[in-house]
Amino acid sequence: MANTILVGAQWGDEGKGKIIDVLTEDSDIVVRTQGGNNAGHTVYIGKQKYVLHLVPSGILRSTKKCIIGNGVVIDPVNLVEEIDGLIKLGIKVDGNLFVSETAHLVLPYHRELDAQREILKGKNKIGTTKRGIGPAYGDKAARTGLRMIDLIHPERFAEKLRQKISENNEVLKAFGAKPLSYKKVHNAYRAAGDRLKPFVANTLVILHEASLTQAEILFEGAQGTFLDIDHGTYPFVTSSNTTAGGACTGSGVPPNRMDRVVGVMKAYTTRVGEGPLPTENAEISDLLHGLGREFGATTGRARRCGWFDAVATGQAAIVNGIDELAVTNLDGLDTIETIKVCVGYRDGKARYDYVPNDIEAFARCEPVYEEFPGWMTPTNHARKWRELPAKARTYLRAIAELTGAELKIVSVGPARAETIML
Image (cartoon, rainbow, N blue to C red; front, side, top):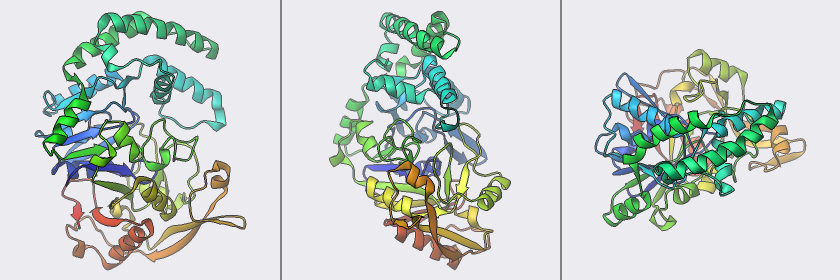
């Protein structure tokens, strides 16, 4: 399999957790390279459902090493909770999980600032998860953040935390919010630091040494292409690089060690939070929500749903250098008689074959559709390409061709077995 970067080709929630789990079978190491606990990867093994926020999905396979890279921002208390939850479910964590000592921390004042800034924006809010991810990355860029290496050195952490809480309490007061207690924060996060210390390591060295032994590494992306801080629908984006380049900067593994990029996309389009979604459609939203589908793994919020947007996925293929496609949730379209695919945008007399960088222009865009006949029969029984309905195969070929990459994986349900490898 060689070294593989896995990215979302839409607005996140593409089903990456399952695809990562499938690809992990042929990997030695799984690396999470960006984002924080605002992401949620869901994996079903038998009847057991696992929702992972910071720990790479590879942890569910006992022989795989998992790394939380330097590009991730970590809430230590939440990471401890996640680790303990996995242990209770019988998952081996000790010896399998390594956390970068240079990963930045998410602390309570980041969450408070996140919430207050959303309130202040009012109707112009971004729709963040309010987990403090943006403010934590802001401190990182400002060179004032605390890192895992600080957390595991008690005196250093105490001094830096005291200063940061004093500074941020002044900002919170200006918002009219309640100031934080240094003692409470310090005690909770120092306890988390003691618990996490055995996992903290120089992950750059681990990955370099693994590369020398020809280990196969899978880089696990969070969110999706159009939530990327540079290439997404700014400002309705996350605060990290969710595209393929983020795998290099978020792990320390150089670009010339990467062998392929796998893009994950749903057979339709979804988005959580605010921002333009040209193909958004009430009919398909009501259908999917009525089936109990498309609710966020992290927030539980109902996702906005629409028809497949080939303009967006085509641009994602260009930005990420996507070689192979994994299409998920095909079974979500099983009962739809006519399926639409967006092949362009129209804004008045202007026609776009790409995603406009001007967010106001993008918000005005109307989709230009092609229509495909639905297959009107269940697909979740299919385990081979030829077992899919002919109309489903036609649809899949079309969206892969429009996206511009080779179709390699089709998912027809949440379980590992509900996967077709081409």
